Length: 131
Image (cartoon, rainbow, N blue to C red; front, side, top):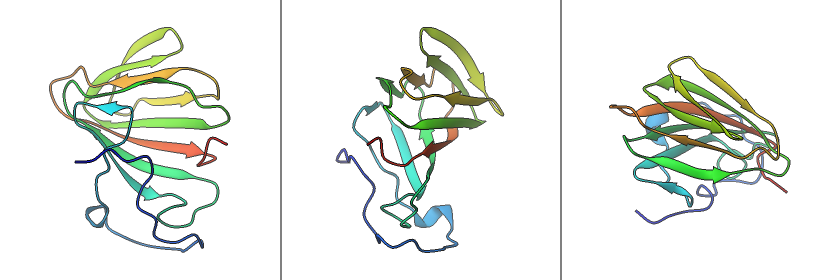
C-alpha cells in the first residue's frame, strides 16, 4: 500500500453525511509504521468539514507513529481496544481501553502498540490542518 499524506478528496463543500465505517478505506500515512492505519471518517478532504478531523486508527502489534508535534492543532486520542505506550513530551505511559489523552499544540507525542492485539483508537484533531 502506498503512503499517503492526506485522505482521498471527495468534496471541498461541507456535506452532512451518514456512512458506515466499512465504506471508508484504510490509509497508510507517512510517519506511521509497521501496520498503522487510519480511516478519515470526517475530514475536510472527505466531507468538507471545516473545523475537525475525526478518524479511527488501528495499529497492529509493533506499529507506531513517529514522535512529532503540531504547530497549532489540539488532539484527543480515545483508546477503544488494546493497549500500548503513549509518549507525551518526555513522559511515557501505558494506555488501554477508555483512556483519553489530550495533547496541546507544540508538544511532541507518539503512540506505540506494545501490546499483543490491535490497538484501536479515535483521534480528534482541531483545526484539521496544521497551518
